[in-house]
Length: 222
Image (cartoon, rainbow, N blue to C red; front, side, top):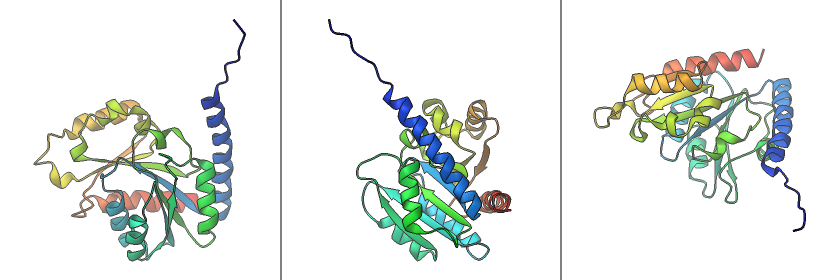
């Protein structure tokens, strides 16, 4: 039998991506632009949460949003209607953004006049967690209807996220969702993660989330 080589492509891709991500992060730091990578499954309320966040912060800082989807421009239009600059990134079937794709979007978008850029990543709980985009911080949204067991099923997503937003708390009377259980499961994976319980629909908890984001942007842009 002929000998053959085994090439660890996945690790090589990740190594190269991590180096590029670090370079993107350093360039954003020099420009004093904070990049938030926002992840979640489809239907968790990313865009609605973003609109609620924008309404509270857009008079304090210059904000831009990059919407990543396999197709369509629905979310970019919704964000533009909220009063901030937006751009739609089509991934061509890819289920995530990596550092190179993010950098391409940032270059087209232009960040020199922006204090905060939000990257709304492609909706799923697997692929986006694996790739460093060069973001200043990672955030994710878990909605109540998805269940409190998601940290057990998708541990990497919760491990890499600096903040977890538990959204749609206005629906807890309908769904069997345990606040203490989900918090404990998140803490076991990531003791430093901030957890906020919010309702993007009613506005409950959004102010606390915005306070955290406001402080992070201020620290980054010093």
